[in-house]
Image 1 (tube, rainbow, N blue to C red):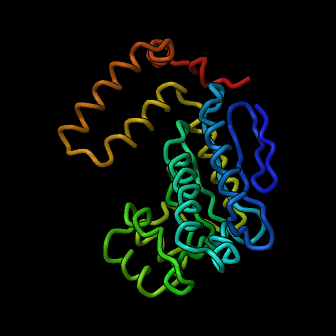
Image 2 (image 1 turned 180 degrees about the vertical axis):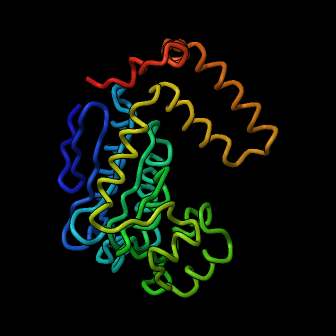
Image 3 (image 1 turned 180 degrees about the horizontal axis):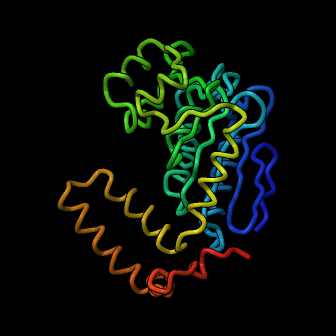
Length: 258
């Protein structure tokens, strides 16, 4: 499956994709970039051979937010249409059937922090910075996504002030899951991706579906839905292979990616 993008570069190796946002100089997101991201994550999910993706930024910045030039002459009707593209892109990432590991290599500002939040797991370089600066440039948005991770208090502080958080502050606020040196960032993300890629592909996809669907359910509703997925995964050949491999003390066949 081809990924013919200008700003969103994709490399694939045996079911493991590396998606790199590459729009110098700050990886700012334009309407064209939103559409490339949406198409890319749709295609990753449609590829049955795909197991996991690593998402990062080229250069020293993860994503510097929206291209402010797009907002200068934006009226109400244009903004409504523009934001529809934005929502479709964010939904495509959240709903992507394979896990996305965010390798946050630098600043994740505005749209950048939302893109990071849409990853299943976030690993940040010690040089990463996080902010919701929309209040200073005449727009709003992003807070609901950040609130999933940071909670009400920190999200409101970031939204009202535009304050930037260091990687360690983001870790304390649960915006990221791990902080490593800049040299260790990609190797750490790739090692985690390899670990996930060694698991049963249909089980991983069902697990992500379950985690997404149950996130906003009550405890009882969520567990009931999760039980249906447990029954579904038992119907896959990989389930039997995994159990046999465990009993026979060997590597399951699906873990060997040719």
